[in-house]
Image (cartoon, rainbow, N blue to C red; front, side):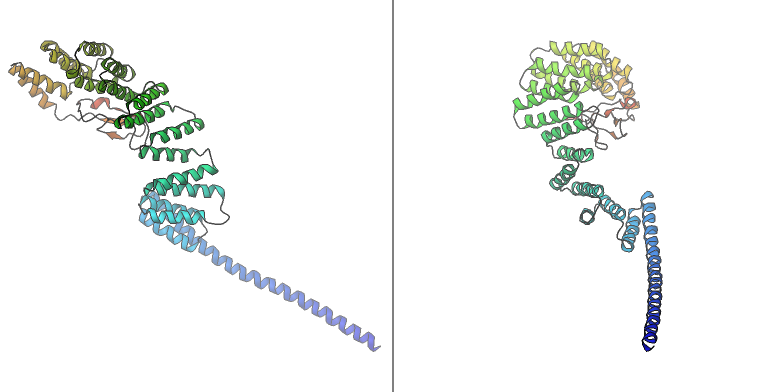
Length: 410
């Protein structure tokens, strides 16, 4: 009997204990959930504050207020340090403001994060390369962009950045090789860029006195792209320096066929040739043929100067009148006409010519514009300084009024 009572008591006690244990466990869960919910709410409010600062930073970027944007993004990362996008934005802002050291530190911090998505890591490495390039650390920039290519061999932007650095430091051989790599990945026209790289290489070789290699580079440029104006000009210069006058004229003549609007570059070279050539007949033939092919102000002025040098005054004045008729605001033609008339003692005609010239002095000088980005310049260059496109600079037709000898590329 006593044993049965004892068994029943302990069984009842165990049941109650089990019930209490279950109740305690449920209570613990409820308390834990309550604490977690409080923490989650706190964290949510904290993240909301971070998001608010982040979006305010974006608004400041859009309104071109970088200092305020930096302030808001800094607040955002202090509240929520897990947001990669905020650090990326901060790095870009510091780079744009020229604070390269701080931008670099931010990129390096992103790259060192554990379990970082590979695409984000590569983008951070690429941005680090941009930081190095902006800071003038060009060797580091190249190796950083190369690190991107090691993971992503088809990364076009990394290749283009490397090419630009090689162009900036005049390493035209490596720029050429990089453009070849780009051409294998990107469809489109690359020949004119490759030709310019070879032409620039030839210029350096010629300057260093390596004439044979320079000629080889120029010819290679033409074999790649036979419409490159710059290479014809410099190949002609090289031949002329060797007194190979016929070859020089032949090279310069090609400019007339390839790009008539730039024939004045060849004419300026011809003027320097007058005093060094025994027979000027090839030059006269060249100029007269150019007038037939390309009747513009430049061509008529060039022929006028040649004819005046021969003593054919009336023929020279005729060509000048033709030039002014085509381009009424052509200052060089008007000035030269006044000089010719004064030297010939035709003072009244010269006075009228100079009076007419004074009325045209407010016209703008020769201007050039990039067809890709709209950049304007007083100097003809083959690569746009703003958008970095090759062969995008051309003469603004309405401003082709005044020809200045300083407006030509070297």
